[in-house]
Structures are given as C-alpha cells and as structure tokens.
Image (cartoon, rainbow, N blue to C red; front, side, top):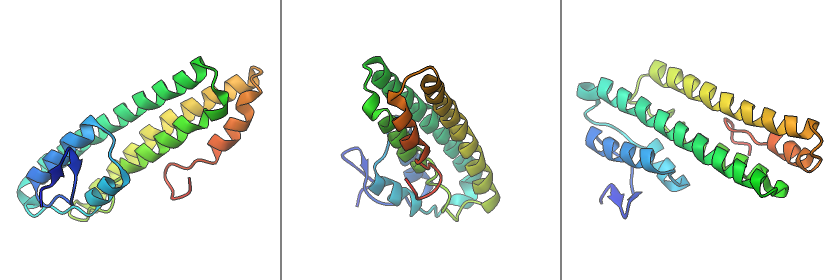
Length: 167
C-alpha cells in the first residue's frame, strides 16, 4: 500500500524516506484525524543511521506547522472580528486547538529518545501557549472595553483545552 495516496497519508510511515514524505505534507497543510493516527503509529527501521537528520527534520516540520497554524488562527479570528461575527469567535480557537494537538504527534514515537520527545513537547507547548494566551488576552481586553457580545464567547474559549483530551 502506498504511503501517500491522493495527497493524503494513507498508512503509518516505516522508514526515513517515508517520514520525509510525511513531513512535506505536514509543512503544506493541516492533516486530518486519521492521518494524525497514522503518524502516531509510525516507525523508523533505519533510525540508527539517520537519527540526527530525522530529529532536525521533525523540528523544522514542527516549526512550520506551528507557524502555519498561527497564521490560519489569526486570519480566522480577524475575519470574525472584521465582520463582527461575535457569536462564533470561539470557532477559530477550537480549530487552532485541534490543529495544535496534531503537532504533538511525535510524543508516542518510541523510536526517538524520551529526552528528545520531552524537550520538543515542552518547547512546542510553550510556543503554542504563548500565542493562545496573547489571543485570549486580546479577547479579554475587548470585553473590558465594553464589547458585551464577546463575554459569552470568552467563557466558551476558556473551556477549550489544547494539551488535554478535554475540548
């Protein structure tokens, strides 16, 4: 079975070359839930020879995924605010949280060292949390400035969790 079929990841990658194909997809577009599961189930038979290259490519991919996710998040949030669509301001937050959960696909990959996975996870969480907090603060300031429409949305947004299974 092919790894990439119709531009979609159709099974778990098994070697460095297949991971590179997946990284390319991850850098271009968000992946769906099934593709994320395939990534989490991935292995890498030839990791001994390529571990440092793999780790560098993974870090690069994570940075691109986060940057692209932030751009989409800001664009969606700005669109809601420009059109004063205050009833659904929480939607970009849900979408962002969902996309950023996928960024953590590497955590169960036991062919990578535990230390590397923990350090990368910590770094990813810090970066995402920083952006999340800034956007939450922006919505809060708009509420303080007298936008009563956003108060209910802020309550909904506060219930969204990025780094837990609760959303």
